[in-house]
Amino acid sequence: MNAETIRSMISDFIAEDPGNSIPSGPRIFDAPLVGFADASDPIFDTFRKPGIVAPWHRHPRNWLPSARSVIAYFLPITDAILDTNIPGSKPSREWMFARFWGEAVNERLRRILVHRLEDGGHQAIAPLLSPLYRVEDMNANWSERHAAFAAGLGSFGLNRGLITKRGSAGRFGSVITSLPLPATSRTQDPFSACPNLTGGSCGACIDRCPVGAISSDGKDRDRCREYLQEQQGPSVRGEWGFPYSPCGKCYVATPCSQGLSCG
Ligand code: SF4
Ligand code: SF4
Image (cartoon, rainbow, N blue to C red):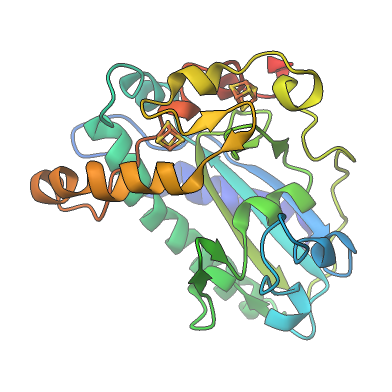
């Protein structure tokens, strides 16, 4: 088992999984991006610093003492679904299914990756499937987006999304393993793909937010959460049975929704 077999495994799963489409609708995810980080990379220590993730963010070796690598991937949502979420202030039906059914696809992928690695004689764990995974004050003890940054998949934007070469709308996943894999190179600037954070231009996501939760100072996470859970949550739960509104208006119809070339 090597980097190429892992890339193929992830791509094949997304191409073939029957759950990768919404009911009577388009496919959820396009072909994934895959990257690798060295589990001993000092970047993982920085995620505990104030303002990055949280002091309780766990190092790969806290999850798996034999960890040598972190496999990270991005599952980009198809344009057919992205386009449905552009108008209005409510999330489209397709966008909601992509969020919640898409994450079910992502969970299966994490599980399958762990099993395949174990079958190959390696140790592996997906933190988001672990009973030790927890979220406190809106910050988790493992961040899929930060793992993806460490693995060279992109850099952060004003809306706090990770801008990859396939945009920022999609799901991220990761698996920590004892298998040594070649680390993917990454940008030294964690904000390099967002023109607003590098030079003050763009700012399209500011205007996209229906409740003014994004400004040139960044994203007001409390305001965003209140809109998703308290303002829109009851109607989404009542009509669709999903736990909250995934909104995502700041991830569509922006320059970075098409990828890294936005700068
Ligand atoms: S829309 Fe513009 S300012 Fe907002 S995250 Fe994307 S590139 Fe950055
Ligand atoms: S998810 Fe919606 S409410 Fe939250 S910042 Fe983006 S556009 Fe605003």
